[in-house]
Amino acid sequence: MPKEWYVSFHGGEEKTSLNNIHVYSTDGEKLRKALDKKSLAEGVKLRELRGFVFGPDKDLYVVNAYFEYSEVLKFRGPLNKGGQHEFAGVFVKHHADLNPGIDHPFNVAFDSNGDLYVSSQNTNLVARYHGPLSKTGEPGTPMPLPEHLDVEKTKLPPGTFVPSAKLAPNGLLEVRAVIFAPNGDLYISDRAADCVRIYQARTGHFLRDLVSRTDQVDKPIHLMLSPDGRYLFVGSGGNDSILRHDLSRNSTSVFITPKSGGLNGPAGMAFGDDGLFYVASRNTKEILRYNPKNGRPLNKPFIKNLDDNPEFLMLVG
Image (cartoon, rainbow, N blue to C red):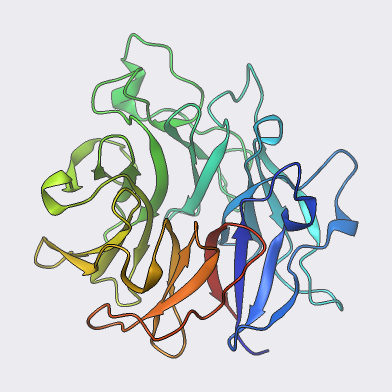
């Protein structure tokens, strides 16, 4: 099967047809919707999809972000005859008492052990859940708090891995993307703090700020690692630029200068099979392309005149 681009959009109540992951060819042609809505269980609705990722079981995990539907949905990895992923179940769901931590979720990531981490915009924390292949707990249920958080006097929601700054020291002000580094540590973009923070794998101990205001980052939202794991790319939403942090040298530089190529509201990022650097320009409703070495834009957008604001994108195949 040829590789294809998966793109999630802002969607919402007024744009129900966009509450899906949309599929485009590597030539930019719109093909179909990735998720089979006919297979959804009763009561399950797609509303404001955000981050999505293939899990250790090869199934597709998708953030359903709308407030009353705060959850992570699971779809089967293999495609059906219509080229779509069929619904497999609700993997994680908001519950006022049992699971209040997930509330207006934004992004998901799996660690090297196969457990799931979810960032939520309303609670400004990252919660950890037993993964689909877990042998230590029921898949999709909150995992125990890290030891250093167990002694906190403030009551934390079940599953909390990195708390909100309102609940614990070195917590998060306004969480967005989460991503695991090659060494297993967790990188988190904190939009309000204008930084990308590092927390130790498995323990959740705060280590340091990797990228901060001194590196010209302003309201960071999306994060992406280069295929070789050397660079971390940071979407700087406040000044419409992309930063590149060299993990081996611990140095940050501006990769895509502010508004270069028409970039306005940098969202999802990915490398294409052609080696080019792709960025979702949220506010112009475009997918843009850049030179992977110097960050210079190509002459025209890869896809323009999208029906809605693009959020996340991934090359799949």
